[in-house]
Image 1 (cartoon, helix red, strand yellow):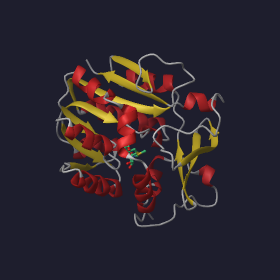
Image 2: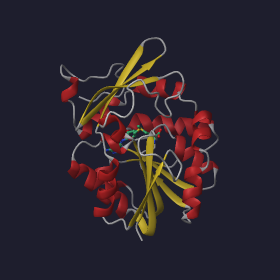
Image 3: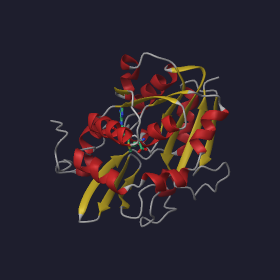
Image 4: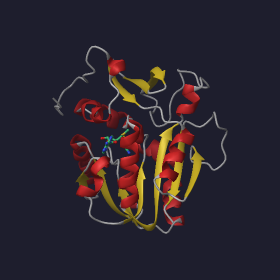
Length: 265
Ligand code: SAM
């Protein structure tokens, strides 16, 4: 049973068999969330992203934003500081509590909604100019049906000319063996070693090592870039523009992340 105060993640006897969407609840235990936030320095992250998301949102005339994967609140707080009207959703209550506290320490009050993406519109009853799903969050969905359902829910919460900004780790490079497993991944910071411990067509299991021998894992679905672009089109987005590591031109095997801007109109 899911217990948010557990200090150890539980993957059972066969961690490689854990390939289901609901498992994110058991992965983001409090100790992992706390460690992550101590070590991922928000200033460093802000610097590496620059004003990419702010610029994208402004270029599309967005003011009212739904952060569907709030996590510990990095993007919600950033956008509030830039003057956007933000609603912060996440399926995990530990994350929302941490995000709320983080925002308070930045002098901001978060408007939070606990909602699983697959049933987002049960809890979110408003329309937005933009939805953001960042920090490689969509990778937590293991079934195609869940992915389609979640994207359809994101689509439904957007105004007629709204946009969805969704990012993903560059799994193509991993699946096609184009990057070294020792590669240090974006936004992990200098103190965290993130290593892909196992990669196959339906699982990327990452090991996160923190100073003091604290080890956590995440089991994720290795989304291919063109597959996600296709799903976005299939749920109804008219135009999907893909960026690599916050730049418009990229070499396919180089970026750590892809960012898709999907337009409804
Ligand atoms: N966007 C944040 C960032 O960049 O720091 C958080 C990223 S974290 C990798 C992924 C987040 O997605 C977690 O907070 C998790 O609780 C949330 N999440 C995963 N699957 C979800 C689902 N099915 N419904 C709602 N939230 C989900």
